[in-house]
Image (cartoon, rainbow, N blue to C red; front, top):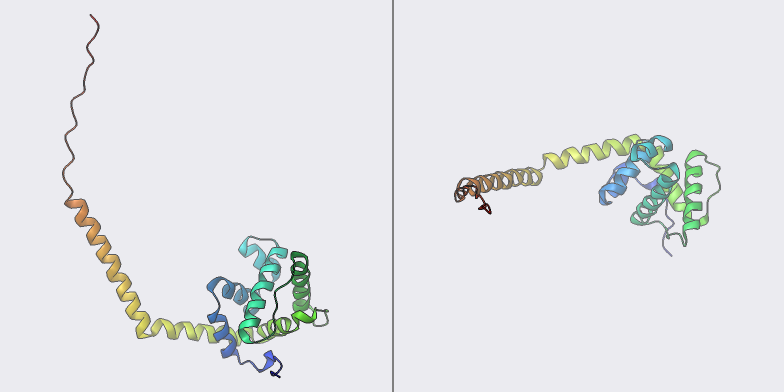
Length: 179
């Protein structure tokens, strides 16, 4: 029998690694809403959506994070169930005593853990980003990117300056009049 999923055992650096393993947009949403503790209305305004739509997106991304972390996270069976789960997750993040579906227990626990250790996760993510930007691999990628842009500019200039001259414009033609 596999051990029970316990998000309280996850270190902030491990949670940061899990967030970095997600695609950029879901990671950014989870980071803004849970790690940086942005209110639901402010996050919805930032993304230009309604709070209900943001809650549904947050639920989807939290379920994928839970699955990545090794917890039980099954997708909702219908749009109504998804909307109900989104409301439950929003309520559970606002109140500790809010009732949640048994399918959401691991997801709610992981989201609460993110809220609890948000500043530590944020500092771990910042440290990982600084380490990546200072790595030789990243510096090599930046150098190669700059060389490629320079070559494209040089090639465009060469094509521009070596093109054949434009043909002279023909003199205007007058139609013979019927006289």
